[in-house]
Image 1: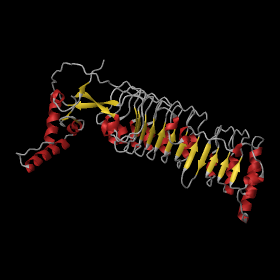
Image 2: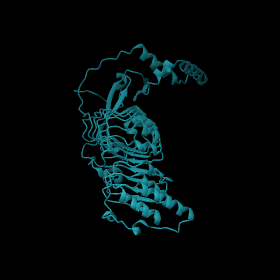
Image 3: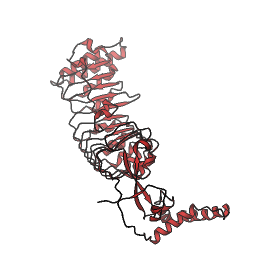
Image 4: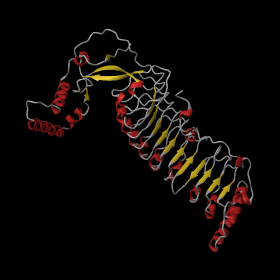
Length: 448
């Protein structure tokens, strides 16, 4: 079924719920549990330890005494791993910064009641892994290569402000919270993000600053309340996977066609009325398209040019092939339409009776004149090619439909579907003359 979670390849990316490891079963408060490797500290280190230990003791309060005692113990033993788990800790004091002296690689605060972290956590530059899962955060840092922040399954209603300072962040998971928007400032500063997961929130719109995330490769914002996608999404040109399922989208911006590296586009369970014509611009990269359970009637022209391996389109009110007789009225073109068509025809004109150099000179003069007129250039850029005679038209066309056999059109497709394998594709013709010509299987479109 197209809506099952197991269609994703990364289970951690879907919901982030890992099985509880055995070592989390109970809190081990002993010197041996903190030490994984150590060496004899230098004289300078001993002095630093003494100063830090004194500072910790001065800042110790009743609620933090157990944690601070553990920090003091760690300052003596120089562990590579520091664990303080399942102790109902509600906050972490700034004394955590003194662990930087130990050069610890792993910080484990699993199973507490934390809702925020002190800014001093950023001073632990040697940390590669920081685990604050379940009721807390789980933070995995590697400041040399990647920095990952997992804040899933919490109760954030606003985007945590401190995250914006983590400019090296490459992976941010904020699924299953109560977020209502994405911070514009976060988009501006977190320019190294490669993976962003905002699933299961209450976000209604994305800021235009989303375009700053130019390194973004995987973006998932399923199970939200998105009503539209900003056109600036087209600036995220490195996107490989885009998950927009279970929202309230009615259309996509034309700029979706700029995502020329996009391989997976998931749009199921929205309210899409149509797909933009520009989607065919990503025909070389797009392999997986899911538009199931929308309100689509027809697919864009040249949709057959996509090179899909997986395509889900069931539960859409697609046009059915039921030919009926209709009366055709000859179209009357306005002056603007006639001029645009004639201009485009002359730009493409070739003749066996006129020397090629004369034809080229005339066309070059016409191009120069168009370049000098900004308005003329803007109008002609809106022209579309007739899919039968291949001449260009501007604003007057005949919308038709042809029916594609999915299996024959997308030969590499491997997914199975319970619905019919025939889908309608839009065809745009410049006139009834083309429509009445033999040699095609186009049908006019009649809506009830």
